[in-house]
Image (cartoon, rainbow, N blue to C red; front, top):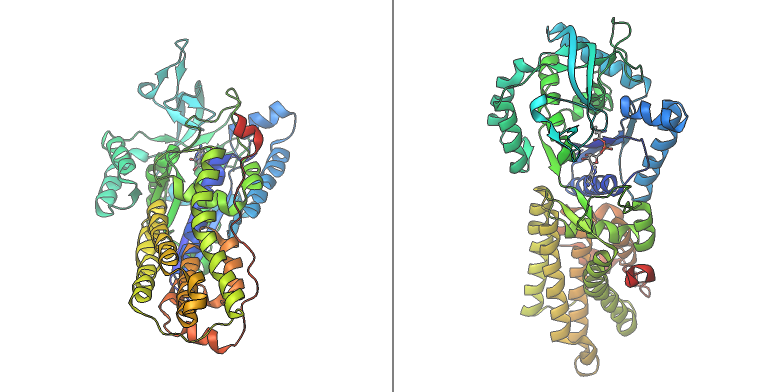
Length: 521
Ligand code: ME8
């Protein structure tokens, strides 16, 4: 078994159906998980829903249902989204599960045993939308002069008896940790923001509430439920069986990567590591704060009426094209914009016309002109150069970029190799060679066949279904679809030796059409 690799997404608030940001994060995490598996790692991939807190309790009240009914109903939409988008998660955690309450209470007890929890009175500002406490100095003025959180959400003055966590004690240890682990917070711009924040000193954090009861009970303190972020962050260890420290926890903790959006970096890089230090548990290796997806450059909101259901996009364009677009179009870590036209333009140019067409043309010619028969053949220099280019794009450049979470750069390297193959087809014109030099025609088509196998393995993490279809059509066994298969020099002759012939190919990357209402808009 390969080395372990544990990746998590944020757990989403199921106070409504999933939006495009949720889909984006799940897809990015899935591409990483599939890539690491293809690189031979033993991947553990966790996602889920964050079901406690005031936001959930209030939403349920507004809808006239219980918080449990709301979270049961809505978390099912998140599970459905993951399944429909082909997200290969191992664990879908719900924070209302009994095991999660037990795990969070154990974390609490350990923080208490370290002397880091004390009872006091909280007086300050709280944003229900962000589920966050703010200092007066952090607030901004709204249009009517009202106080808003730095995220622009309403805040309310809160006075409550509360348990506090001695966050102030951890400012120095955290700064030391960031220094010693320069890639803990990524991208660098977010690391700088966090370091500036911590350098300014940390205040103790209110970690329990008494004004409602929809949460994990504080052990031994009647009437207190934990602040929702304490329980939310703990999901990452609950899913590994914590407090049981053998088994999955021993194997997969510390997490290699917490993938989250830029708005919740502080919770993951200040609060979470401080809780873990207090509980004497190892810290995760990396937190990556990705950017936000914008609809034609605008934030989606109910007032603007521009909220997109990601499942509609997946249905209109297909899951693989949506995944390809998001990974290709957006520089990972920065904000990105999408529109139906951009999805169609990008996918038609690259997936359908360049890559899909290369596959379809080549396999059709092998089927028609060679009865689908794969044979031994002699290459000339041009063929070797092409194969070397494809090999290095697939085996070196794309994995290097994907390993560093530069998906768009990795796919760009891959596209370069696809373009090189298309230029080769045009130069060699195998259709003309059919009459003049059939042996050369065979060599050209079989060189392309070899290139297609490598290109398809390399792009599989992004477009798993379509790539799987191509690999099925060209007879590559499932266990030979990892990146290590790319260095197997004998695969082609092994494939020839089976004597199986290629069947008539079925297109795996059809052209997309822009629905008429978008075309008119
Ligand atoms: O924050 N584009 O849940 P959430 C990209 N429950 N990503 C986006 C986005 C957008 N437009 N909008 C939101 C929570 N996200 C907490 C997390 S983790 C222990 C608890 C991202 O449902 C957001 O940054 O509001 C977060 O990573 C994820 O979607 C879930 O957001």
